[in-house]
Length: 486
Ligand SMILES: Cc1cc2nc3c(=O)[nH]c(=O)nc-3n(C[C@H](O)[C@H](O)[C@H](O)COP(=O)(O)OP(=O)(O)OC[C@H]3O[C@@H](n4cnc5c(N)ncnc54)[C@H](O)[C@@H]3O)c2cc1C
Ligand code: FES
Ligand code: FES
Image (cartoon, rainbow, N blue to C red):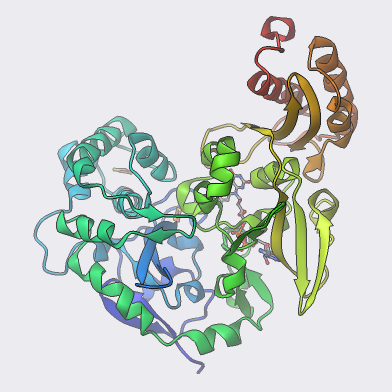
């Protein structure tokens, strides 16, 4: 028997000899009989299985950063050295009172059968613990991955509004800077008003004294690379129990951000949700942070990594399409050997990549250029749905003249595409109806959509045309005359 996986489960130290690929949902319900965490879809779609995952952060005084994640897609091996909180751990062991989150859900009649309720409570508690500043919209976004089949969302929204009204005055600001560090005062304030029990204040020190490093290092010699696991544990959960797994979250460099004079380097292991907190991107490309809410749901974004979205090689990967428009170059690493590949050349065919055996995607390198950014996506529903067609545009202009452009699209070919012909055609032009017409025509020659469940070939061609128009209208409202293009 190998070394156990060690972590803190609610208020207790825990260890497990289960296979690291066992999903936490099964560990909680079957191994520990903690059945408050519910099993719904097992595909990250319903939020019934939500748990909190707390990780040590901060170089000086240790603090824990909590995020809500779906336990059905969370491998036990990735919990090592962390704090795992199931719904049972959100109340103190001897508590008779409800937490403010639970109280508001009950008070507003936001519960009927109660199956979804633990997931909503965990997601909202995670939001209160982790968000830099609270807002109604932010809290609603935090539960966008939680499905309720019987209550109706109006009462849940009323509960959220009332909760924020009650707690708003004590907000001290959860996050600091770009490192995802948490203000320790914030946790103390949440404990004081009963959002989480007092034992949360002891967790940082307890995590620091857990002995996990030896195991982590030995495990990174394994074969199947697990980043966020949100694709692997949907596509092949059974095989995850038969393989040696290597958890990329245990490689510190994978989560780093480096700002150089002309380039921004993003570690491929950064979870998508963190993109919203990177000051460099927030300041220079605020639209990027806003549009992230169109990708999956908060618990998925809290786990799914930037590198996973690329290597997953979905022809409609939202973040991949954004990165194509932003001019990303990939740094691939094998041992000490490093090579660079522009993102548009990384995709060789449907799910075929320029990635050699043993190589991992280490850095996503973005040029630090001034420009305007737009992302558009058409899907059957706003959250938790992959696109029929998506598109991103990055355009630098001097006055009305376009200096440089990169336009990308997904869902219109076997791979995510940089539309290089229309990008080149725009350069040096002043945008007007004639140029737009030329670009829209040219775009149709660059794509090769197929008819499938997400739409016919003709529909996808029409969608791309509309999405390109939407970019131009958003980025150059003065020059695009909507009435010409209806
Ligand atoms: C409910 C749900 C909703 C979703 N909605 C959307 C959506 O709206 N838009 C969208 O774009 N996507 C969506 N997705 C897909 C999601 O974005 C992907 O599952 C995710 O990006 C994969 O990243 P990961 O880190 O979880 O990868 P993993 O599942 O860990 O890995 C995926 C593959 O990439 C490999 N890999 C990962 N990182 C590296 C690396 N650094 N180097 C080499 N190989 C690596 C792994 O070995 C594996 O083969 C959704 C997924 C779910 C479950
Ligand atoms: S069981 Fe539905 S998201 Fe996990
Ligand atoms: S209360 Fe029944 S599923 Fe939400």
